[in-house]
Image (cartoon, rainbow, N blue to C red; front, side):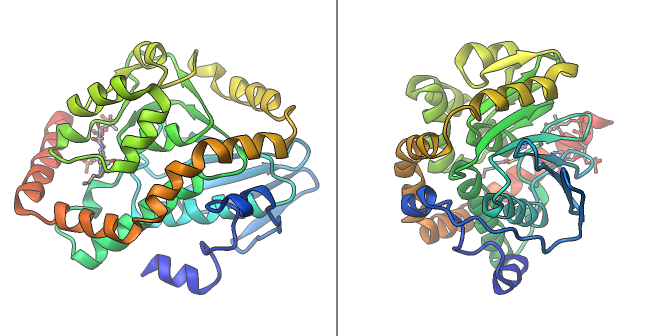
Length: 306
Ligand code: CO8
């Protein structure tokens, strides 16, 4: 009941500017600092269990570093923390942009935590899926400039997070891959994953990519437009910061209205079908055949390791 408990405390609920265009355009920024928070005149650090959030008051740029070993898998707890962090930044007068990256070497995010979808009760799976939706609604619908600094592998839900940002910079490393590989697990990316990739790389490439569950090495991801720029690993953060500075030269209101115009129809599709999407997920993932596929996939991950 993590999400419900947080909602009861006023976190993660409808005060943000993220979903409605009106709210998006006329956001009321307030500083929320309800988690342990160190402050200095220039930088504020919000420390959470699964990520750190550092906001530079001078530049208005926050950096979210995911740090959930071993692979930044997106668990219910992680997703709840992420949604709270995004909401806090969205409401913060000082914040204009967010860079999303990882502090785990070679991993951006391994996507949804498979253990949250295997052998759990329908109630738990429903709550988990709501938190996945919430993460996407907050990130895809953010009025802030959002840049993904992809410094490692980024399959499935990790790719969704990156695609939900405004711009993607990926480390040019032979081992890093990105893509929506759901079909390889015997599961199906839901319509809003499909919409997000279609909006990013176009319909034909998205169809090809989704059917085959393709994971792209960095140069191929750049070629199809799944990422916007490749840089050497050690240039990821400097490039993300300089790209952010360029984006922040655009007046916020004009950029935000444009972003809302582009993204609102996609966000609205999920908002109007949120409950049925949760029900579909629970029905699908609870099937014996799907549970079996997940079990086999988890076994394969362990075998690959040994
Ligand atoms: N969830 C939970 N645990 C994971 C995950 C995950 N997604 N990925 C890896 N792990 C675990 C491994 O089992 C392993 O556990 P243990 O240490 O207990 O053996 C540990 O993390 C480390 O994993 P690796 O040894 O594989 O680490 P590597 O550094 O060698 O590789 C990778 C990292 C490349 C990220 C690799 O782990 C990998 O490919 N992971 C699987 C990624 C994946 O396929 N994710 C898909 C998740 S599904 C999703 O995001 C969208 C679902 C949409 C829902 C649709 C429903 C209808």
